[in-house]
Image (cartoon, rainbow, N blue to C red; front, top):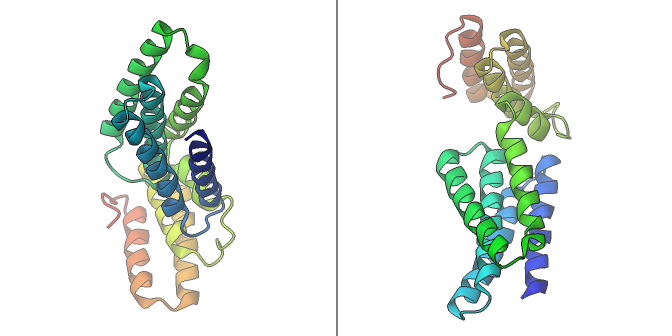
Amino acid sequence: MKKLQFIAYGIFLTGLFLKFLHLPRNAYIMMAGILILLIIHSISVFKKENKFAALKGFATASWMILLLFVLKFWPFLTPLLVLSSVLTVITLREAYKLKQLHHVKLLVISSVLCMTCYLMPTDERYELINIKCNHHLEKDYFSWDKYSWFLYQNGHTSEAVKASDKALEIARKSGDTEYIEFISKHNKLIKDNNWGSFK
């Protein structure tokens, strides 16, 4: 089981690495790692094996799920944060009772990494994940458009205009008429200071 756990963590970290490089299928790879972990710990519970290890595994997996949602800018972050926090508190309490606090290092690392990303302003998080290491940035008008949205939402209007102009420029070069119209609408909303929804 431990070997499978290490493989699952390795799969998740591979997906995470691919996400920062803005390479495709990263979310599916991260989900595969999480799914393997959940299956492993569910089997442990079913077989009535080490309950503390299973609890610790579920808590760690919950932070990994939350990290995936944070990095993909998916909804339902608050319920996931509450769930992860509750599972972590229960796990730490059990670890203290069993005098196994030294066995929760991975859980602590996962929670700290996730909270660091969670607490970052959305424009900074998006820049880190989708702009900085994006090897297709000169052709990726979608990322520039989305980046302009997060900049605007965080009050960086002038930077949002620049990002939107960049998105529009790239979209025009690509000839994607549908997206040119979409980005043009966003561009105007930024300049009119009236952008209330990305879509």
